[in-house]
Length: 362
Image (cartoon, rainbow, N blue to C red):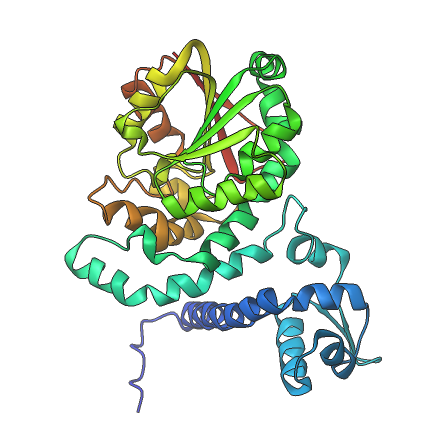
């Protein structure tokens, strides 16, 4: 039997908090259904079908009708799809499809769910890290995780990198058009350089990453895009030095992941040409906890949870600093100054409230 609450407790606050916990658990359960939706293309099937019954949807998607009906019902209750009770039909609005189906959308988020199973599979090792320190090494994050992350980050590169981000630095834009050189540090699967290659056909482009499977995938992506003759990728720990000198060095959502960001920043500084530019993209968080609690977009918990599940833990796994996702402008300025940089400019893009952008120079 449950104990009676103490008489001085505020039952309205208890009920509010209890339903928040229930909502969070519901979201976790919906995550399973969203992973399945991503794997089987269920949102895309629904968006393409228009208003449809569960039986017709099941036939179109090639799945069992009973599971289709339960999945559709859960998604309708959760607000991810629409339900017409009179017609007994399910559908997606254009806005829902924009976020969950359209992979070229700047707000495509359906890819995030593909990263979740890996986090759950690492929960035992992460628990041990809580008790004893260390972390979950990068090799424990497999293809499904990296595929989801690649699809998540691709949207910004596709919609904004050449169109908005680089042109916001006119000197850099002109240099690349004239055949300047670019190094992308922490290039992952290589998406950023592929879009830069398309937008700046005269530029020389190289990507570095210390994770060999990512470089293998990046080179395959370059071959598939027909750009392998113009873009190359190398396995390299940049804290041991960066070969060559460059007009532009980029780190896209990377610095907070670096096990050793301070020596990495110093090597980036050395590898820039005297008039070169270091361009940094990070998540729009602060290094101050209260600022993240009060985050205007309400995404503070997203930052710290992503950090614990991947960003911080993979750095700690190799004895790194463990900066974490919620690095913010404050920490970026500190690291840049220690690296030898003297010019630091924040660039704001009103259509992108989710990221911070920094133009850094010697």
